[in-house]
Length: 343
Ligand SMILES: Nc1ncnc2c1ncn2[C@@H]1O[C@H](COP(=O)(O)OP(=O)(O)O)[C@@H](O)[C@H]1O
Ligand SMILES: [Mg+2]
Image (cartoon, rainbow, N blue to C red; front, top):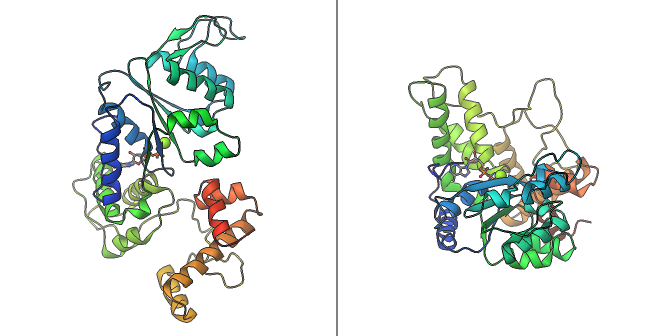
């Protein structure tokens, strides 16, 4: 994550998010960045830091979901020698090392209540105690946190501390999913294409065919910008002839002639998951739409309901897995199920 990294996008929702960050960056208050996976939260966090008066001080980052509760505790707040078996030396935590600068905590929603309480103390009073320590240490850290969860719902369920949420929600920057940034898809695709062309040391980028561009624009991008980057890079490096425009986009790297699973038909009539990989999808939908004689909205509501039902069945009605499968947060799934009255 460099401050020289470019953030690509011209859509109005994207520009609004950039503008929001520029407004909030100069303050010393904590910032919460909310967005689906792959929407650029880490990039935006860096932007907050580099547009603040702390830009020449450290920006440290830690993904809370990758550490156990006890490890996270000692990584964030440090520990004294002998605090636990294996703690041979004194260790400065992230908050101490980021002092004067900013700390980016990714996937904050996964932290334990005890850790949340300690984070609150740091941002409220600027002090902490190392694990196994007695002394209070003063730090001055600007907290930038990110999550793809809806924290107020988690707080209502007792899974996130209300007091920390109050402190964090001074202002919330919400990043738009890529499917709401239609104009940006091709821009980003070309940007990532040039990157991989450069990496492969090919002479020039031959462009995309009209078919490929059309697919890029119509895909839903559940994995957002990260997924787009992968699709573009994969499709280019696997292309046979470097001089020929890219025609074949490889969306699913797991797709294999030996595997007969996955792919859900867009409108399975019998509520079953059926194989559709070999059929031209767009034409399928069009035919179904014409056949249905429904209006646009009713047709797509019905499609959505079908997909939700099938996905639930596919995941043995485990809502957490279903959410993951569909690229939703748990709460997004719940609200969709509620919308269609699915139990
Ligand atoms: N607007 C953008 N312009 C260029 N690259 C982007 C943009 N947004 C995201 N990316 C790229 O997409 C990938 C995912 O971004 P990241 O910030 O890690 O997402 P998140 O933290 O929300 O999961 C990274 O490779 C990042 O460089
Ligand atoms: Mg991330």
